[in-house]
Image (cartoon, rainbow, N blue to C red; front, top):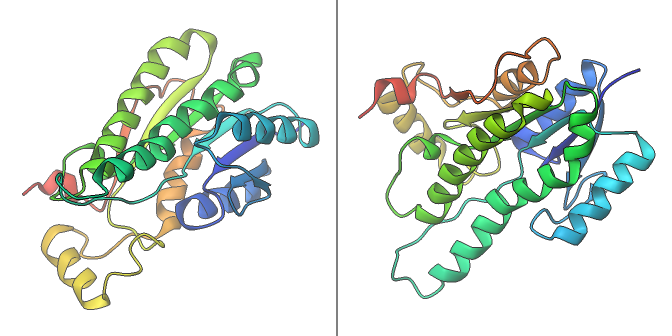
Amino acid sequence: MSRVAIVTGGASGIGRATAELLTSAGVQVAVVDRHGDVPVDVSDAASVARGVEDVRRTLGPVDILVNAAGIPAGGPLDGERYVEVWEQTLAVNLTGAMLMVRACLDDLARSGTGRIVNVASTEALSATPLTSPYSVSKHGLLGFTRSLAVDLGGRGVTANCVCPGPTLTGMTEGIPPAAREKFAQRRVPVGRYGRPEEVAYVIVALTAVEASFVNGAVIAVDGGMTARGG
């Protein structure tokens, strides 16, 4: 019997690439997204509960949860809309992951091989100017992942965190190509932006039943950017 996965934010970018790669590996995948197979607002507990129940009813108990839903946000601390942006960003990027884990927890623990992969960012490992709502949400997601690893490891549920660096997704498509190339040549040792499929490869590897001793790991998929520093 094939395993069942939920991928939030799976309608585009890294989430979509992950859903496609899991499907090619024989996993039954439900794309949970505002525009996905199962329309869900991850920041709303009732919407999450309905969405997970729908997946459970149509595909079966959930074995894998990939929290890839996220929104970019930033601005000056004294900006007029800063508090609103802060609350919305944490609601989607951090609280949304928590709500999804809670909704799937019984399923994930039932077989002793449940897998949670949270998709953070290299912003969880450092910070750049004027991105504090986003950076804080991703730092929080990393901390949440480690707490899950400690709390759930004894039940056979692993939790790991993947931190993508600059990647060619909807979040970065608005950056002019020349600016992307300049940044990559200056900051990324491999000299380019990553592709969603390259991040998805690592995410899917962490969902394998055989990856049972990888728990609480934080893996940067960034072409060596964080290793380079500066």
